[in-house]
Every structure is written in C-alpha cells, then in structure tokens.
Amino acid sequence: MKISKKILGQIQKDIEACENQKSRQGSEALYNALIARYILLDSDFKNGLPNNGKSMAPGQEFDYRPELKAISEKLKMILLMNQNEIIESENSQLLKIKEFIVQGEKIKKEEYHPARGGFPFSYVSGPQYDQWMAEINIVNERVLTDHPLKESIGLMCEKKDDDPRACDKMIGYLRAVANDDEFWDSIKVKTEEGGKMSNKKVFIVHGHDKMAKIEVARFIEKFGLEAIILHEQPNSGKTIIEKIEANSDVQYAVVLYTPCDMGRAKEEGVNEEKERARQNVVFEHGYLIGKLGRDKVSALVKGDIEKPGDISGVVYISMDDAGAWKTELAREMKSIGLEVDMNKL
Image 1 (cartoon, rainbow, N blue to C red):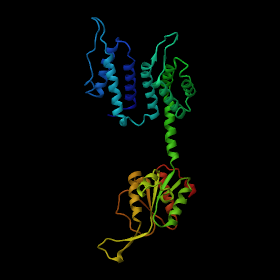
Image 2: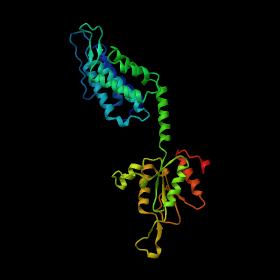
Image 3: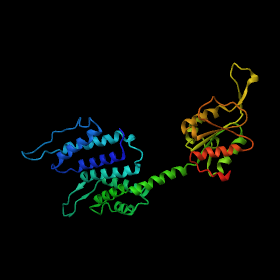
C-alpha cells in the first residue's frame, strides 16, 4: 500500500482523534466517519472491528470508544506493516517528530496524576514520560539546531519535572515544528547537498601496472576527490570480496584494463594468445556496474588488449599517451554530478 505524505498525516491525526475521544458523546459519529474514510483506502478495513456500541440507559448516545480504540490500533498496524512503502519525500526526522506527538498524547493518559494530597496541580510523570523527554532532547540537539523553538524545547526538557504543564507544552512545540514546512524543506535541501558533497570517493580497480594506477589516482585527486585503492585500505580480517564491499561506498569507479595477463580460447593456438587484464579486474568491473550503475563506472583501456564480450552501455576509454583520456574521463565523472573543474585539466 503506497502511503503518501497527505494520507500519512491524516492517519496520524485520526489516531490522535481516536485516543483523545474521552466521552461517549460524538464517539459514534467519529467511528462512522473513520469507517467511511478508510473503506476507500482498504475495502476490508471494517473486517475484524467491533461495531455494536453500547448504551448504558435508554435514550443515551451509544458509546463507541472501545471501537475507536480498535481503529487506532488497526491504523497503527497499517503504518507499521507499510512503513517501507511510505513515500520517501517525507523526512524521516519529521516522521519522528510526529511519532513523539502521538506518544505524548498516549503518555498523558497513562502517566497522568490528578491534583490531590494538597498538591494543587495535575501533572504527568513516570518512566515513559522520562524516556519520551530524553528522546526529544536528542532529536532537538541533533536535528532542530537551526529551528526557532530549539531553546524552548531544550528548556522544557530540563524543566520536565518542575512545570506541571510540561507535557502539554512540549506537544504544542512539537506540533508547531511538525507544521513548519519551510524548516523541513530547508532540511531536505541541506541533506541533498550534504550527501552530494560529503561523498567524493572514486574507487580505482587495477592490475599489476603500478604506474597507470598512480597516474589515475593523482589525476582524480586534482579535483579534490578521494582515490580509493583497495590494497591501501586496512584488511581488518576481511576477505577480498568483503574488503571490496566495505570500500565500494563511492560515487564513481575507474577500472584499469592494463596488459597484465595473456589468454586465448582453448581451441586456439598459443600464437593466438592476446594480452588481457587480470581476472580480478574483470570481476570487480562487473561488481561495480551492478552496485553503482553503468553510468558511474568507466574503464580505461591501455594498449591493444582483449576486453570482455560486448556489453551495451559499458564505457571504455582508450588510455592514450597524449592524455586525451583525461578529458574524456573528467567529462564522464562530471556528467553524473561529481564536482569536476575542467579548468584543472
């Protein structure tokens, strides 16, 4: 089930409405409205839900609060079962803020202490409340650093046991943050730009030609990019394939097809042997195409060597002595979004 941002917000509002329905009055109307709404989303939504309502005396409105509780739990389960289908445009931290709001409303009921014993105020206190405030404080320090309500939220976390209305005030702050579309849009832009800027790694696959490897690495580093050469990375007890997997979280890969081996078809004679790249180079080339995509992998071919069978879309660049390969490789890297200043060629 695809859950859009708008539907997600409606579900969360309806969960709150169910859990905040404290009187029988209006409970039946809310129940009927929710059934009508969610049957459009799921034709079987009503199945398994109680739908009788109860009246304590003739003429009284039916009490549908137990039914609303069941609807709330069903909606929570829908979100849980379909969390991977929630459209990615919804910021994960915004979802966390909205979860805090729902949790706060629940905690208000479960850890509520009425005014008594000479204490003039009702208040919320308990282990769930303490954990809730602690988690909010972590998100506040990590995510809401530039939000106008950061200091107010931080102060409320500090005064959670001193202010009897701390829970209600915190829920109010969280609602304001959740509804601040301008703030969340700015977070999204920073995340996208940060993701693009933070990963400047280019993986280099090579054989025995050390000079070619060094030349390509120095060329990549001219643009402020980081050349990742496998044998320079720590082993940490990993096998070769594990080491490749651990170090291939990169934006781009360059594969060096240099004449390191000789090979031929078994029916051909020795005189028909051709120069070819190391077998690990061919393997890693295929692995990186599968992981990064063909547009993010270029193969530099040095000399007249045998290449793998023709594969549509694979980029092969001749590593010529004149250095034209540098311009071509730079253009390929720039085309996928890497910051490559062509003036540095």
